[in-house]
Every structure is written in structure tokens, then in C-alpha cells.
Image (cartoon, rainbow, N blue to C red; front, side, top):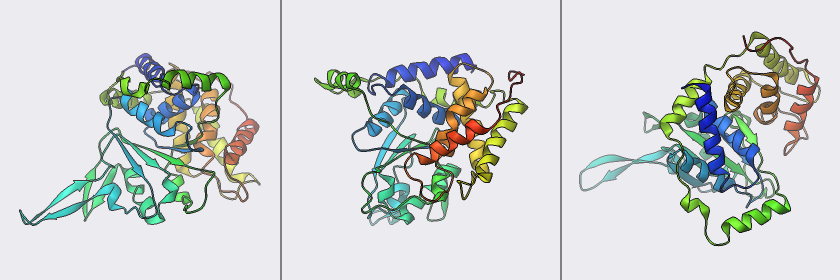
Length: 315
């Protein structure tokens, strides 16, 4: 698949999801960026902003399987991965697969589950596999975790450890809507939910082909150095206690490639790196006294301070 086809599929999905999600084209584009890059997304926003609707709309648009898990303090790891159940009739154990065996998994309010249950997703997110009773099984591809957090309520929540935050390619927010957008929402949902009528505009096979095409997007040596300069700046900043890891370096590279492909380009520009950097790196830094999107703001300041390459990036 060539990059022109990736752009066409991306536009089809964006237009399709925009029938449900009003005024969030940038968020949809970031979701697609993570999907093409093979990563996972964490959305931190207040209830009722359309997080669940976005995940469902994206799953329907690619004709993929969708599962939702409501994370609660009593949720067990086996409720996510599955377990072997003994049948008295047959005298044998049979595997009951958990919701992790899907294409898009919505981990709703992930920070309400205990650290033990949260950690059950680590293997699935990083290695695309789960281990049940000593048996390792591969997950369906494409596989993507779409996790949500409620920043308003902190009672009964367990903050995500840095090791798990680092597994998420991006952390984004839905943001607020304007008056006209709210009126648009009323007009669309006043009679029935348009989600019921939403049809697929792509297939999971095309998603995998798009991911392969993204791997062919050219990254000039000067762009690679630019990415590394940003990463090193996070490690040297006086505002940050712990900078971005090497996983973050690769995450920024892959996200910039995917974003460039969505724009229809076969090469990465500095602006691609600038666009995705706050969402890819903001949650990976450790600094005392920061919360919400403060990490993304620090990354924006760092990116603004790093010298931008001026070479010919195409080849």
C-alpha cells in the first residue's frame, strides 16, 4: 500500500468518525496516528466528553472487534485476560478468553482498578500476548488499548505507575466544545443515536497494510538527530527529574512517521515531530508538582528551545 492510499483511508475514517464526534478532528487524527503507529492511547478527561463514543466509532469504522471493561477496585486480572474453567461434564478445563482478545479494548477509568489488575495489561500492551496458567497466547492484530481516566475524582483511584504510563504511546484530552458544537451535538442526537447507523469504511486488513506503509516513511538523518535532541533536552532540563526513556524515543519516531503518512507525505518534517511530541512525551517525564497537561506544556517549551533542522528532509 502506498502513502496516498494511507491518506485516503485516513480521511475516510476521519470523516466517518466525525459523523458521531463533533469538533474533535485533531483528536481523531491523533487516534489514527496511534493506530497507524501500533500504539495505545490514554485519554484523561471529565465524564461525558465522548471518550467511549470515540472508541466505539473508530472500531466500527475499521470493522474491528470492540470490547469494553469497566475498571473497578474488585476487578481481577483474569477478568481481563481470561481463565481456564473446569467442566464437570467433560472432566476437562476449557479456556474462556477475556475481553483483551479484541481489536480495540476500552479500559474505562483504568485508574480505579488495583495495581495488580492494571499490571495485567502490561504484557498485552507491550508484547501483544497474554499468559494464562503458563500458556502464552498471541492477541488479535491490530490490537489497541484505549484507556480513560477521570481527572476530577481521585477518591478510590490508584495512580498509574510510570512503567504502565510508558506503555501508552500518547496521552490526550478531548477538550471542551463551543456553543455551535454543542448545538450540533443536539441536532445529531435529538432523534436517535447516529452510532447505530455508522458503517465501516475500512477493514482490519487495511489497518495492518497501513501500518506496514508507515514503516516505509523516510526519516532523514537530521530529523533523527532532531528527535534525539528533544529527548536529550528532557533528560537535561532542570524542570524534570527523570527524562524520556528510549521507548519514548521510538514512540516519537513512529508517531511522526504515522502523522506524516496521514498528511500524505512519504517523509517526515520537523513540524510532524513538533505536532506529536507533547502527546507522546508529556506523560513520560517525571517532575514534582506537575499534574494534568502540565507535562505536555513542559514538552512544548522544550521543543521550542531545540534547534530545528533546515536540510532537505525528503532524501
